[in-house]
Length: 454
Image (tube, rainbow, N blue to C red; front, side, top):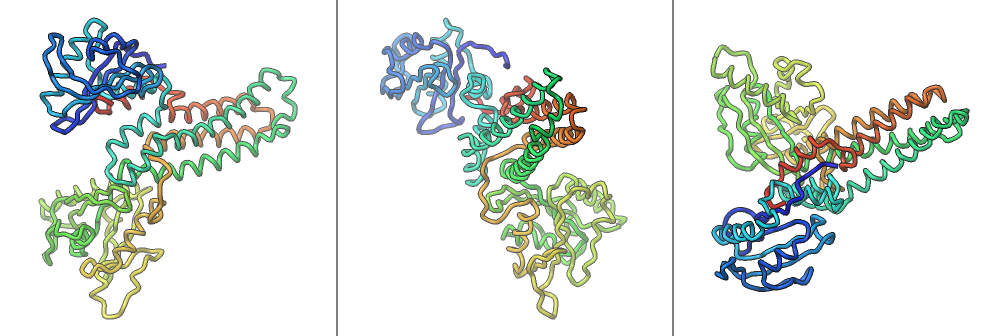
């Protein structure tokens, strides 16, 4: 368990700036005496008291509502006192200064970022997934992301993780008990159906991994890059996707010299779209710098829209980007300018790309669907929780250990010790998600990214 300073803490829990309501939050052990000193009454737990907030001389600072939550029935698991007053900056600072001054005798100090949630985690009020969901809910950039974060906060993701952990523990118990009693090793693998059980776990891990990968895009967003030769309509497509003139459009090749970014939402997923300089071989030094920035944008992207003119549908992308750069990249070939063809073209999504017209808007809905399909999502799909990249990495590493465990299980009883070790490593990885197995460095990194007062 991560050690922490047990001194009582206080902070302004509402956002900086002026507002109609502001909240001072205090958490610590045995805050009854401080509550009595601040409020001049003994507060009834979980009861709203409307009263004046005064300093130690009796001078009025503000009037508002005080609510006392006694341990362990509070957010942090400690005694918590919340003072709800008017949300002016000067009022909040005066209230906080008064609280810190009056709590000096019990060692009250200002809270660090995320310290209230850290205490909730340490006191087993929430697990690590739920703690992260608090920050994700606050930072959600779309209604869908907020909904998914709320599901994580309510324990949906944790329930899935804990169910897998329980199954791994059951297997570990069988294997390690057999190691302790070697006379029972004979035909152990077959007798307890270890191979089918590991195989079943592998399937569950793969399903969880797929869902979690899709959920990551809600929290971390999607980076989409428009790439291709000059004058294939990248800037026009950029403007069409945003339905406004973000990028300059011209018949002159090489108009776009620098990367232009815009932000939109696609079915609740925050997306950063980058229009880039056209890829071509040139002696223009300024244009070369633009092309270098294009390659940097491609390298950091999740999805590449390889834009080509449907009248000359040859891609130049691979001529500029090494195979290593494009490895594991999601690429959609976009055949633009179908409005310039003499014959009608089916602009629906195909196996090789999507046919569109940036001028008329034909095919744009199919392009949006293709982007979602590429990352494993369907239009209108609801995410069962919100996830982060570290969750994906932990599941992937756990899955690797399960595959190794299955291999050793196929060795019958000759590799039980190796089988036991792989199951332990898998259990450790899955435990890092909820925090049941975690390093202090990871916890410090996560909670330090929270805002003060959370």
